[in-house]
Amino acid sequence: MATVASVAVLGVGWQLGVQAVDAGQNLASATAASAAVPAAATPSTPTQPAPAPAAAVSATSTGTAVQTRFGPVQVAVTISNGTITEVTALQLTNHDGRSVMISNRAAPVLRSEVLQAQAASVQNVSGATYTSMGYAQSLQSALDAAGF
Amino acid sequence: MTAPSQGTALTIETMGTMVSVRLPGRTGDGQIEGSRQAARDGVDAVFQRWNERFSLYRPESELSRVASGRLRLTNASPDLRDCYALALQWRDQTDGVFTPHRADGVIDLSGVVKALALEEAGAGLLALGHGDWSLNAGGDILVHGQPHAGGPGETASWPVSIVNPQDRLDVLATLALGTPLRAVATSGSAERGEHIWTPSPGTPSPFLQVSVLAADIVTADVLATAIVAGGEATLDLCTRRWPIEVLAVLRDGSLLATPGLRRR
Image 1 (spheres, rainbow over the protein chains, first blue to last red):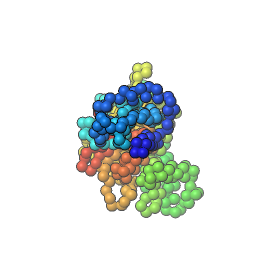
Image 2: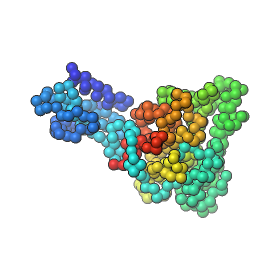
Image 3: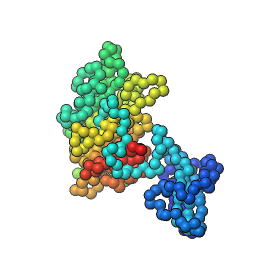
Image 4: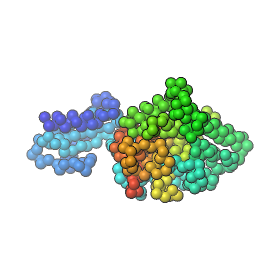
């Protein structure tokens, strides 16, 4: 029962707010991939419990590929003795050439960790609304006057 | 008010702030100067029209007459009622955090009016044949096309710096703006926060500043305001519900960012 419940909860989580795509579409390759998932694969989140003992009852299920705004996403879940021991991404998508994390949650970053665009030709500064008086002292007015 | 000159931005004073228009390309040519002037006048006209109708600083604006009870909402123009309906839709979608009602009950549409004016001004520039432009209204930015003439198939994004709320002459980051995320809006809890009402009055926002990158400027503007007002719960709700990127500055100056803004 616990196994079924875990899979169901995960399934609901993946489908929230997204439209399920044809499950058969990617199933063949996905099933093959899930069978090949090594037991020592890196868990996808740091909160994963330790791998179950070798003797434990273990099963791997493949989730339906769901269409997210980043493209299709699909995972395989390994459950041992009613506990999820492994979540493996079978399909993750690419967005502007960079891999996309499954969650879009904002998390703490250092200033040096924020992706920097090519800054050579900055013409605009975004900030809390300045008044027409405040504009004179703003970076924007300097950029506007500089003629970049 | 400034006459356009070669290479500089066109600026327009309106809505109590400044709008900067960038039209990359060759300048100096008489014909192009004429087209720049037409673009500036078009943007100016759009902002003046929205300001005349929706400013609560102008006692004779349509919205001021609604606020003072001289004009019934049911007799107001379709534009005003559409704008109010849009703001109410955003209130529902943000679970009530964004609201078009001031604490005293007056309808305040300033949370959407500037963004709607930006949207219309952008559409006007496209209609005038300008495919590459940026519009910056008091720190809320909408872009289209590219910042400079590129080769065929080349797509360049517009670099936009995010100001440091603790030092306004410093920038926190420079982010790329372009399709699909063509808009960025930044809300602060310190400056001109009059349109931000926190759900529990007297409780300060945990954020000094929130910047939202979105596909359109109304979404960016509304959600930046909502996240400042609603705190981390609203931040999580918004990043789940909309395809946006967020850079938020906490009160101690530390940063939160969505995965798309993180260096890997």
